[in-house]
Amino acid sequence: MVDLETTGLSPKSGDRVIEVAVARVDAKGRIEDEFATLINPDGEDTGPVFIHGISNDAVREAPRFTEIAGELLARLDGAVVVAHNATFEEHFLRAEFARAGITLSQPLPALCTLWLAQRTVSTPNHRLGTLCRHHGIPFVDKHAALGDVRATSALLPRLLDSVGQPLVYGATPASGLAPGYVAGSVIPRTRAVQLRKGTEGWMASLMARLPMTAAEAAGPQAAMYLDELSEVLEDGRIIGDEAKKLAKIAGAAGMGGAQVRALNHQFLDLMLQAALEDDALTGAEIRELKRAATGLGEPNRFDHLTPTPPAAPTRSSARIITEPANAARTVKTNEGSRADRTQRAKLAVQQQQRGDSREQIAAALGVSVATVKTLLRDGRFYLNPSSDPVRCDLARAAAQSRENGQTQADFRSDQALSAAKAQEAWRDAAILLAHEDPLHL
Image 1 (tube, one colour):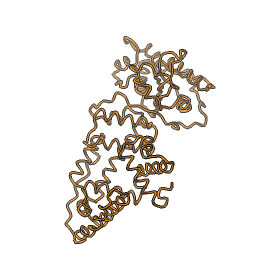
Image 2 (cartoon, one colour):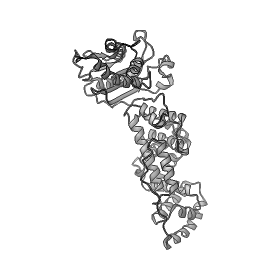
Image 3 (cartoon, rainbow, N blue to C red):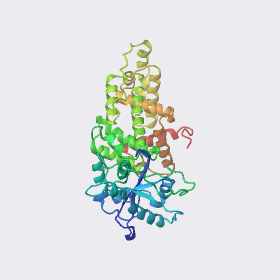
Image 4 (cartoon, rainbow, N blue to C red):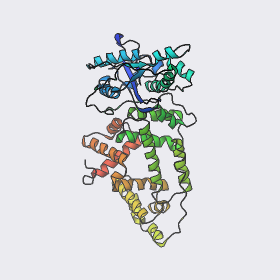
């Protein structure tokens, strides 16, 4: 299945392709794989935004057709190509391949669902939306290439059933279109459009509107998404504007639904890990976990958790509360320094390893329980950077920026991070670089 969004109606007049979607579909219309990306039309205007919703800004950082041509050909290789109004798609693809200097060794025959509908269905017209309504097929994301491909995939089996006899495809599917090219090599620019809360929530809508799977998010991109997710879920829920912002970050990184879901799971796992740092779970922590999971469309993820029964105080724990007092006072004399932060984080981890609760550590260090959670997270990272791969990758990037003479402001701008996340990465790099090659830079 193939669909395009374009700047206009005629490639002969210079109109260009600005979005493409391709889906591999079985005989029953079930989608097995998807690819979708916005396309930069070499600086040309994107045309009627009110129709396709694609602005010039949306395609500015998108790949050009020359960059995705191999990907497209690899996905069409050996397949029966299907499109609604296939002549339109064919003319634009032929023009784009020619502009990219690619000469196809054989034609790309296609089955046109518009042609098929005109011969099998009596409807006022044979537009894709009309046909979907006639057959009771949900049609979301109209005039988005991926939405049109999904609708056409569901429509084709209905049309084939209406023929009443086997339909013979009178051509051999083209093969050898992109020798040596491996599908999945290009990083797309995805988009999730027409987000709606519906009955399953904003996050379910976001993931459903993205391709099934796409590019894996790199460290800085994953960190940016997780950072935004942390801010969004402070109140335990996601609203429309927040979902759109998350969708924009995911699309800019070329993510699909599977990649977003994996990052959501990573976020929830990190929350659980933080809650378990003192080897105890409170009722409040479980409620916080469940609220975040519900906001991410996973309401049952933490149903198995129960509060940890309170433990009786021991002589060792009572002694430990007083032992670090002098150290705590020393720490607080230089609280703003990196060395101080490292020392406090290590003290927190040491006390936890000796059996103290967060409340006991907070009392010993003279900080809040919330600060103890942060110190424990930092201390674990300083002791074992690989325990937090996303943070480790971001620290690597910050360390490299420092070595290149960049400022923290430059680094924040380059990585598109929040001020807090950039500051943390910059601090991590400074502390880790003070050790002997801790990140193998």
